Length: 488
Image (cartoon, rainbow, N blue to C red):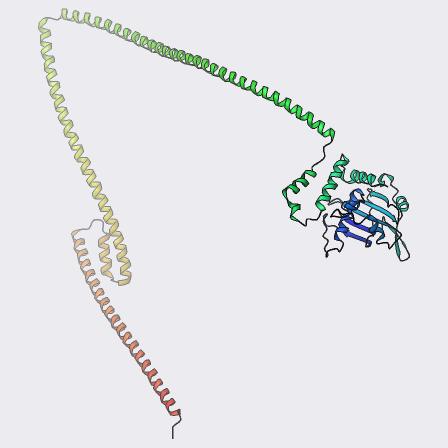
């Protein structure tokens, strides 16, 4: 809802109310006309029902529609309009429904309704429900408005036709009874909530029940057939579920059987495979053993043949030589064997001696390396000491004694004369260092005496300052005492 308008209705000459997002707030004291204003378009503009109980939010029949057009007998005849404009949110599309009435004293009210669906609006530049004559605004008659709109498809001359027109153009319920139910719900919601009875759960339940959509025979038949199909489907589904459970049981048992058979076959296959591998390995080992035995047999055969040859040769030599030659050869062979053992013993003793000598040589080489390393470490330390002595000499300035001393330390192979010279240089150096240390001690003693003298001077200065402050304080007190007035 976007805009509400009145033309020559009740206390309104020409009046419009703009709604914000379908909402409007009317404020005023009691009996100021808020309820009459709202009841004039909800629900009257929705169905055109002029019944007195529909015009009063409390449901009384005290006032009729004639009162809102003719007043309390002030006029003999009057024509008035009410209209309600709708607007699509976010779009410039408008639709307006309206009602016109002509009341004459002592006659029934002439009713007509209309709907603007072609984008026209009730504004001065498009459609006006009145005409200006001089300074007066006279509402249009039914025929003039019908000619102005020129749209018979959206024109109604009875409340029932008007209600159907509003439903078709605005709400579009499939059944007019659903539209009636909506209007009844709006009437109940519109009723003033001046007591707690209106908020009782039973009353709320009644309102909610009344707000339920009316079901047509077509809807009910479709629902009944759907429920019957649902029952059939439920039975079929139960049968399918039972069959599925049976099939699952059979499948599980058959799966277990297949797994058992497969396990036995697999185990038999593994056993056969293991036996085959074992037999294959055994055959391979047997073939290798056979080849080895054949080679050994051939070797033994060759050895036997060679031994037979040597035996025959030995027999021939024995027959060629006498018995004495053989005995002599045996003694010689024993003597040679004894000599061989002695030489082996001598070789073993000599080898042990060589090992002992080699061990001593290794020990001496290790000691030599250690002494050489110690000598190199000492020489490296000596070079470092010489560098430090050079650094200290840059401070002490020892002169030739220092150079003679460091040159003697740097000698690779010092002689006895170098040693004596070095010792003398060392003694001279000790003497110079002792003299330097004595000089340093004297300097330190002088420094200490100087520090003591400075401290005494600071104390004397502090005492002098304190004496000056006391003198200034005494002078100030004497000056104050002189400036005091004397008593007679």
